[in-house]
Image 1 (tube, rainbow, N blue to C red):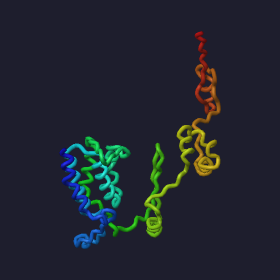
Image 2: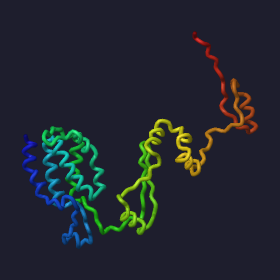
Image 3: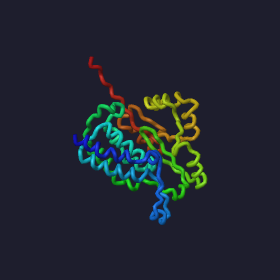
Image 4: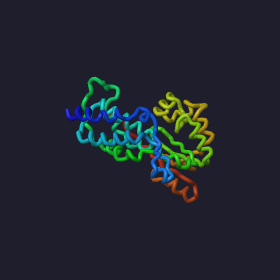
Length: 257
């Protein structure tokens, strides 16, 4: 009942925000910002401040509903789209309520976990900072990351401001990917990595053969002594600068049947 009363009281705050500002960004043209030489673009300040005020009130209740939680996360996600780095705050919040089971007419009650409460509280604290400065110079370095399941890598290349600016302006989105393996090949690769040369005769395996450095042999011996007892022959050859390996001794195990 407290949650219901809380929703009835504060839902009007969200409805007061103009739709034109909810769907787009807002440029801060206040005098102090302009005097600093900044051009701050972000979600409308009224929306961010409204969410920043609503969220801590909700956290004090300790519970939420799946319908209210979806609305709250939707509002915060809109704000974060203008400042993507803050998206890293949210992790557990997206998994608190099953999104495929939400029914607007029959909201279900969920307990706010400590981790979810911490994420939402951090968003409330950082709400005033969720802007991007358009006056900042374009980074003259291009970055690429590896999205494999078990490994990861990040590489960087100096491309200059002109190339970097062209990538930002012409790209369909701010990140792109190049698929090395299709889904079938990736699945087979997970099952057996040693079958590369048979699975991809014209693909990644051939590229690896041409560009990968040769793997050095782990062991290279001139002499191996089998059934040598204490290895007297090997020790004698060692004095003649002959590279010898481990002395192998075969042990006979009689059958127990």
